[in-house]
Image (tube, rainbow, N blue to C red; front, side, top):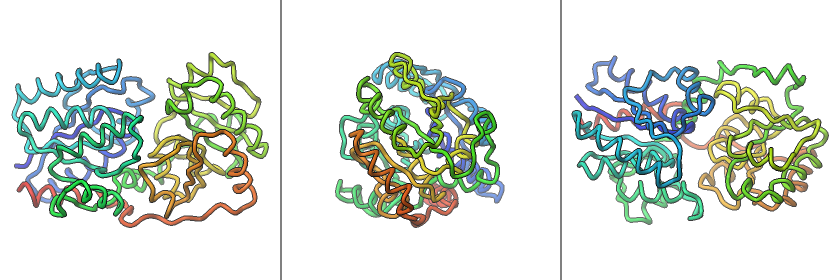
Amino acid sequence: MISVDLIAGARPNFMKISPIIDAINAASGEGKSITFRLIHTGQHYDKNMSGSFFEQLGIPEPDVNLGAGGGSQAEQTAAIMIGYEKLLMESDKPDICLVVGDVTSTMACAITAQKLHVKVAHVEAGIRSGDWSMPEEINRMVTDSITNYFFTTSEVANESLRKAGIGNERIFYVGNTMIDTLVKHRPRFQKPEVWDEIGLEKGKYIVMTLHRPANVDQEEKLKELIQEIIDHSGGLPLVFPVHPRTKKMLQNLGISHDRLHMIDPLGYLEFNYLVESAKAVVTDSGGITEETTVMGVPCMTLRDNTERPETITEGTNELLGTDPKAIKPAMEKLFSGNWKKGQIPHLWDGKTAKRIVEILVDKLG
């Protein structure tokens, strides 16, 4: 029997882990000898940021919750490593520790597993922004430096791993598990309360998300950024589910406008209902650029770099940078009807998790 530890710690992880759980259950039902233990590190501990995802995506209650909680990057990393090390030393070790994405939990559990001689598989391996100021980039680089099996979303990621000296026999181009989740749950998207509260109409509003330090930690820049979006958004409502980090900054700045609707973070089904019907999305998230690409929604990314270049070369995403003055020309392009249509990248077909599980069974069985 092949045993797998599935590590989930923060909101994006749950979207990537959910289809892998489904695929393991399906393989087990077909008589394949594979089982899993779901480990929630507790990195995200706010119910809106994590708890509802278990309910909405049909993820079972975690077998273990390490309860790492908040704190600085170092405090979180330490708490997760201590908790996972204790678990591995006090229970049967798995055949493999499977980590996803690029959050603190990913790096911390990969390190802990390898030090206790447990192999590591990294889902979404090889993606790079080149920006070492992002904690996620450090997490990716450290994780990939000690990974045994690399599951990738694009040929760009494959090439970055090859350049780092990884042999092709350890690189598996499988697609994107986040899109598996999107494909499965798209028919179940739920209209959020804000839709009727402010009278939203399909294609007649813009969704915003901002949380990266480069955008939200400098008060004047954040104020200018939001003002530019308000000024050039064609009179449309702006729906802004506010990350806890950003909410604090906005309260200090006293930003408000009758078209700017700041709401609490939404569940997966409600948020993607909003995105699917939006005129466009303005974001600094990486994952949202993947979802907008598959749903064909114009996306403006307020970052100087991206680890998901296929959303630009193939999808509906454009990288604007972090200068607020980039908003106006992008909005003019949107409202003139000249935004690119895009296409869905190769293997982003809803079957990625099945491919991952088949490879794990083949390699470890």
